[in-house]
Length: 214
Image (cartoon, rainbow, N blue to C red; front, top):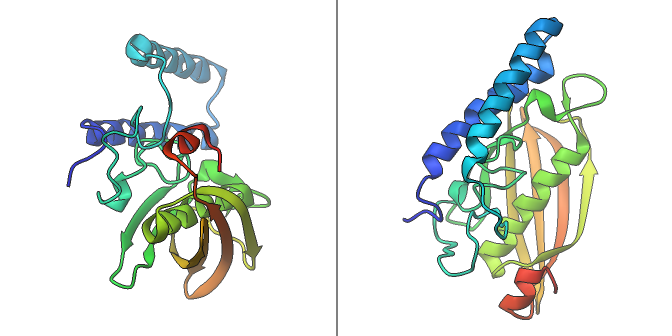
């Protein structure tokens, strides 16, 4: 299978280093001098990366046009810049997903320290919702071609822990015309943490898709 972008592995490696940086920034208790030195090093790295950062349409596939889009590539690589689960996006969760023979997306997602919400050592509910939006959207894409999020409902039953793999599953329910319905769940240690229901509307045309219209 081909990738949307040829240098994804290199970008993912860079993102992994940046994740460690984000983690360290969240946890550090070093003094002012060390923080100042770290800020200078970060500024140097930023300037290096911005040497070639052209303005372009942004799509979390990494593409700037629909030509070249292939939804048959490995699920973990289809949306590399996703803020929810993108391997090349350092702010995202760590995700390992697959599509089983029954058409259900299954795998694990790990929330990092910088995804913390109240009170202690728990994932922020907004970040959990972000992951569900992507996860259910993927289910709709695989089952019915995908669409824009029209509604997303999350039932929070138990807190979602940080730093440990959370088991996820998502699948599409029978579509109704341009309406795609999907369902998802997260479990840890056999306990249901959250479940979600989503409605996605297929765009009428590729132009509408590009504009975010439905």
